[in-house]
Image (tube, rainbow, N blue to C red; front, top):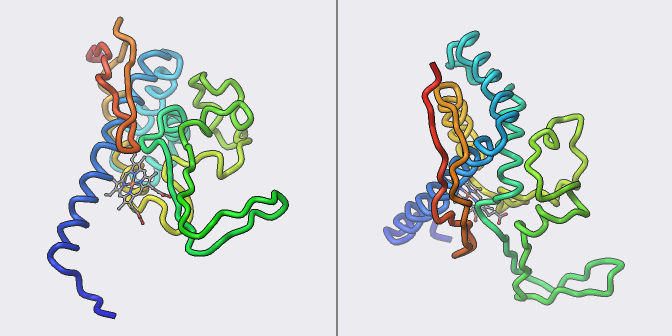
Length: 210
Ligand code: HEM
């Protein structure tokens, strides 16, 4: 097999990285801000974590950034309610019988996995429409691992997951430390296109912290 990339393959990789990597992260960050604006008690807890990060550790410690559990929970809960990619797809390369169900998925059938709906299914998440980051704190996690799929799963899951998590954490902790966010009167409106969530606009009011 020829292992070199053609120019077209190279360009396709770059385009995919921009498409897959830019809008998804931007949408997730914007919706994190929308959620904390709507939930001042969550914003306050996050602010206290940001103080620890910036005032104790001067905002430069990679391990400390990863130890900020509430920050992580806020992002995870935002991705539960608003997974940037609203569904996943798989195409089996051979017939596959789902044991005990009598169902066989045929080779080449498209299997559609509705992430957005699974994330809002009360069978998997109590009060699924409620924004509650605490459900992602270690002691409270009770959902099935495959009921939470913001970055997909398996060998073809999101290759940029770690980068995305890092940039979202850095951006969020930085703005929460410097600004207060309040909800605006405009309701959040979003639609789905190309398998992605696209907010029409995410309006919040912003005030610099003294
Ligand atoms: C919040 C940010 C992001 C979200 C929610 C997200 C979500 C996803 C999801 C759900 C998939 C499909 C996984 C599957 O089918 O199991 C995917 C694939 C992919 N993502 Fe991301 N992604 C994000 C950021 C990024 C970034 C920053 C990059 C690159 C710099 C990236 C590059 C890719 C690529 C190349 C694939 C295809 C992987 C493959 O087919 O093997 N993503 N992403």
